[in-house]
Amino acid sequence: MAMPIFSPGNDPGSSLPELLRRIGMDPFASPGTLDADHGLDIPHATTCVAIKYSDGVVMGGDRRATSGNLIAHRFMEKVVEADRYSGVAIAGAAGPAMEMIKLFQLQLEHYEKVEGQCLSLEGKANQLSGMVRSNLPAAMQGMVVVPIFAGYDQLRRTGRLWTFDVTGGRYEEREYVATGSGSLHAGTVIKVQFSTDLGRDDAINLVCRSLWEAADADSATGGPDTLRAIYPVVAVIDSLGYQRVDDLDLKARYETIAAQSNR
Amino acid sequence: MTTPFYVPPEQMMKDRADFARKGIARGRALVALVYDDGIALVAENPSNNLRKVSEIYDRIAFAGVGRFNEFDTLRVAGVRAADVKGYQYSRDDVDARGLANQYGQILGQIFTHEMKPMEVEILVAEVGTDPSGNRIFHILYDGTVIDEPGFCVLGGDIERINAAMSTAFTDGLTLADAIGVAITALAGPDRQIPATEVEAAVLSRSNGRRCFRRLGDDEVAALVARPV
Image 1 (spheres, each protein chain N blue to C red):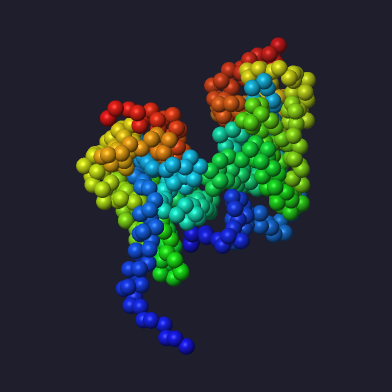
Image 2: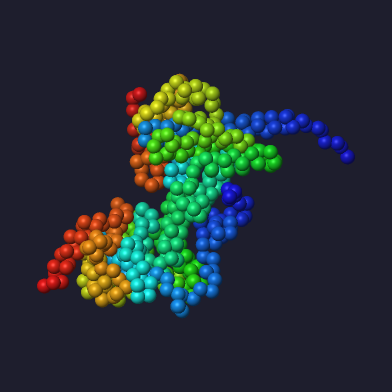
């Protein structure tokens, strides 16, 4: 493939999706006449949450993907690092969701390299909103992708989070968001226990607890699996950047939760 | 109607090459060299915003001397080519050799077919997972691609700096020594380059997935002030 060079009037600038379109690799090309609502079981990713705490945000997501009534994957990672100061969590059709995450991560890095500086946090949220909107034709055929975007805003020195709808609608939330099939249960747990002065440790506990309750009531959400040592993905994003909470830490937290639930 | 003068092709190529060389020699030089943890890129650059050295991909850096707008166009094209290839295939499939050849083709094409050759010399460096995997490609204004082992000098006063580097460069330099060697070679015997006019970056094996790291002003100042 030849190196992509454009005339000044035709330059795609720092946008990777636009560049891909120009060279005939449109990432959001129509998937044809696939109708996922009727007869075709594609894997779906489920519950993800994000909450704001005093120094940043905590994100969490279970590891299960389901295809109809079957468990399609046990190790799926729905919460991923978008770049150093932000993360994205995705619920919905797993294939397009993972593709969107990949494109989003690449776009943030591409912008940073072309422009020589990072996008602002709001700029990143806006980019993701455009990608969700571009996925609308696929969503109309049942392949809905609904992300959560959260990160640490270095200009305002605070954590911020956004939720999206299928049309690319972008809504900034002040306290917490939950998405996916178990979001009602996870969201309720957070709603009851949330306070604006949560510390880091309490925030991680609350995320773990909300996923626990979602897994307890929603068959499509996976709980902690001690036999296979699979725990949800939980990540903290603060002024030090994106840090994933390690499995040993989560194991201890879930043992505490399990002990409390057995009383 | 006047008949155009016949210009022999040798003369035409020579004129173009002289023109490009003159443009490049006006600018300040740049040195890339291998050190124990990767590749260091050091440039004399009075601007703190118009960068000569930048990141292309996980293990690949770009550096250019000459006309800024021309090598910056090449830099962006390289970022695009690398990102598209990584998106289409895998991150592991993006390598410096492929990029260097593509640059060579573009520069060669422009040198022979356009009104004016590009007044640039560029460099594509890739840090390997072990020292034997390091690659430094030097690409000239006419598309010539040179594979440089150890170190590479771009820009004006190239002969003197090359001579200085040949004597000072050894395998297994530490980062501080490598930057020191490069700055001394760039400055020459009777000149000091102030730290504010040094642009330095590394492709460091120990920097995680993205090996490229720009050295901050403080870091450079500490290295420049260090007694050799």
